[in-house]
Image (cartoon, rainbow, N blue to C red; front, side, top):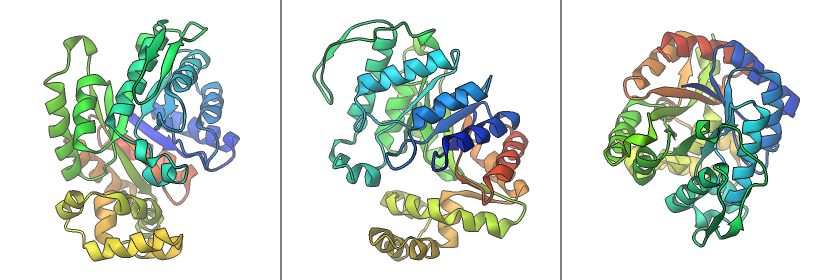
Length: 328
């Protein structure tokens, strides 16, 4: 996979313009990020489907807490129809800070994700769904035929060990939230543990680095643009991840305190070079290509995630060239 994440933080027409640039840059998949405070991802995906002809597209990633899984299945099935069979279902547990503002963070977990995409596959196949679990359904069904439902791949967004193993066993791919080869090596080991229990009927599996990428001809501008996403990644990183990269806990605490007070400028300024190295792929096209290639030792694909670069329009083409040079 050579994918790209587009955040609908701009008018939908502009997001579709970026998707066209991404298709021209030979990206084969576009994921539109899902947060309640941005434009609706499925509105953006429909516009992208109308403006592109070959790339696959889907939410990156939807969660089954703020939208009922049956509704998610309907939306992805509708996207499969309007895109002429190019839909991908990116699903994950959701961002804890975003879900926290909706009072939903306590429901995050592996089981909710697993039940949601299994339900979607059942509904896409034209079956009725009744269940009690992380969500309830009573003879729910879709009143339309989803074209080629077997072609809708499920890619799970996450980074915990249990989510990695579950993805390897049950899904078509894992969108691992990581940008460093050490993290992807760890993820590969966890995925392989799940693949060991994977039925052969499920077909191939793709481990993709869902990486924070920032590329520009000016390395410092690229690295500076990465500070925002890196601040949030460092803030939510598990202690073993921080230890793996020898990141000072006190420095992370300064980022955390600033984010908690909505002092975003202070949080971004508190991001250290070690955090940028660990949690992003940032720099010139040549540097980014080298870092992508290192990740490619363990990953089958890459998704170029936020911020993409200080200038998204320029960075999309540069990121596509870097991904090609890295072998993706």
